[in-house]
Structures are given as C-alpha cells and as structure tokens.
Image (cartoon, rainbow, N blue to C red; front, side):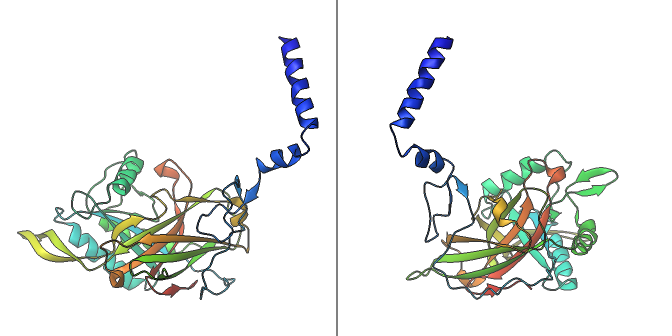
Length: 313
C-alpha cells in the first residue's frame, strides 16, 4: 500500500512540475469575488464572497450615521378563519402608534388564500419545540415569550411589553433601503439593501428580505365580545407577506460584510405578480443564524414603500 501511495505522490508532483499554471488553479479553488448574480462584477467562479460587489443602481442612501436607531420586528400569525385575529391586528396598531416609525410588522397567513406555505411551514417547524402556537400569536424580534417559565409563542397580552423591551436595546447594526422599478418594467422592482455595523457581531448573521402588501380585500372572520360575530366579506388585510426574496431563513452575510464601521450591500429583484405596487413595502431584517428557536433573535429591521428610499432613520 505504501508503494502505491508513493507512486501516486510522484505522479502528482510530476504533473505539478509540468503544469506552470498549477498555482493559479489551486488559488482559484479558494478565490474570493462577488457572488451576487445581480452585480456588475459577478464572478461565477468565486468560492468566497469578498464583499466587492458593485451595482448599476444609483442610490439616495446616505453614509451611515455614528448613532444607529433600534427598531422592532413584529411577525404576527393570522388567518381569515381566525375570529380573534382582527383583535390582534388592532393590538399591533396600538403598538405602532405608541412607537412611531419604530415598529416593522409582517402578517403571516395560514389556512387561507393569502398563505405563503413555505414561509408558514418554516415558522411552524422552527417554533414547534417552544410551546403552543395559538392564533393570533406573534414573534417580537423573532423571540418567543417567556411565560410561567415556559417559552411560548407570545399572545397579544404580552406584545406591547415585549416590543418596549426590544426597543430599549442599543443596536450594533441598522438597515437602509432603496427601491425602484426595473428599466422598462411596471412589475419588476429592484431593491438595494444596506446593513451598517457599529461593532463586530459575535455570531453569524442572516439577511432576510420580504415583500408585503396592504389593503388586500378579502373575507375575515371576526368574533365580537359578548356576541358570536361572523365573516366580514370585504375586510382590508394589512402587511400581508407575499414573497420571501431571500427565502424565509435569509442569506448569510459574509464575515467581510460585518466589520465595525463597515457597510454590507446587496441587491434584489422581485416580480410583483398580481400585487398592487402602490400598496407594497419591502421589509428587511437581520437575524442571527440559528436552527433552534430558543437562540434566534432579530437584531434590527427596516421597511420602505416601493418606489421610495428609507435611510438609516
């Protein structure tokens, strides 16, 4: 066996000596480069994202400030069959009103025509281990609430307190967004996302980008205190998740993009399909990479109306 190994090593060395490009070949196997296909300098052979991507996109996003602002992500679970879910939406509105321009809301539907099944199944699988999954329920910065020493999907009595606690934290990152129609299109939107860091994170991070739509007219069951309630045929649904541009788990932000006082940039493209552009927003947030709900947390979030820019404020 040792003779065979020695022979193979000799063949390899001879091949290397006979190939003056072997150094380039080996270096290309670990070559860094831009790995975003939407970039002008996309390198399909790159193995490591080196944060060098450049884009044909003139943005109004300004340089990041030294003081970053904390926002909170509310992911509310709902369905047109859920009689108490409109009450949950009213609760979210009150949180938004108490914290203007600080709350980013997404409504994830289940069991109706507005459901994005891949997204809902992701949440259901991820949080099945932490306790009950009632409707309406919500995640505040994607964290389950702790009640009676148990981790649960947070019921609406706890949303406001959890949001206040999340907003009291000092952020290490913030996001800015810019959106515009693709040239020659009325339904394809180009989105630029920037993530600025004030310090190095201690864990790997994921960037998640959603398309949401408001003023979606569809039926909704609504219970009434002291009465049975019933279905409303023309209920206006708000902040409905339509598409996950990055997938529900998000894309990994490379280490080179998370440096203190640095900014990571990514472009996205989305076909709006039947969604009404004037009613649509882009939601982007950064979450730590984790496969367990107990350890998952959103670090910050941002939202912008399509066709507009949202700076770091």
